[in-house]
Image (cartoon, rainbow, N blue to C red; front, top):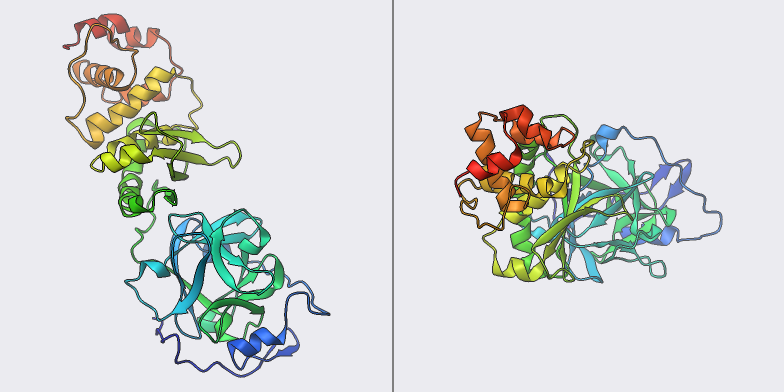
Length: 393
């Protein structure tokens, strides 16, 4: 158990020898004055090997608390927010940060639900939260220290390995010459208690509602619902035949106005994304199903088999309307619809065939088999058109 101390009432420890050099550490300010970026004789800090299981879970939410007292806190969700240290407050959402592995041993520390990351000002060596553009001064690498029985971390700025995140004497976030013996530079990374622990098949979901901050609380709740249901999606239509992606991002997109949402794999990042219509969401806050529909597309993205687009949309609606929110699927269709019309028509068709012909794994079969029209005859002895024609409408 870690004893939380107030941010303002801690006197920092005396000088400590680090790597053969005595670095003054009487206060955070003294640590800052001990060395600056580009100081003569500065050398690049060596990165120690760290066991993977000791590192944070990428994309998860953490509270970052200082051994000198207090916790790292953002002031607003807008780019340019100040970053300060305040008394630990378990109830404060502003003390929660999303930590993400950016590759090559580097990590970003972001305000949840935004693209704003802890950013070192190269001129003043202060830290704010600015729009993340993958710059070195927005990334950090981690070094375990001996404080707290090895639980403490130094956060080195990738833009200068010799500078580490520090609690300033004025309770602002700064960088200072790295000193593993300085409590002001040693941080606990505690998984936020409000975050559901990972379970098998449960994805990591990042959110970006910076373009619609009023929808942030709604999207945070939907994130939990979608993440909780994601393993069920896999059970329904993949059953381990292939692995559902374990990470995706949901983005409130002001450019999307024609339909509620779409899913795609961003070619620039390789990440799966769900883009959400802001106007639709504001007018339909009771609808979680459309996000589940898009999560189905994400889950089957790496399906090695081929299937037509209408079937993919029908499978996604089948998961939503006959499983996630059963009883909501459309039952009546006009003469202009058919089994291959996609969406609700195809979803109803899949549900009808699976129940009428005792094929409970039909959705899984259709999703893991190269599609052909002959499949329906093999399964039921009838063509798809015959099955559609007999289905009550």
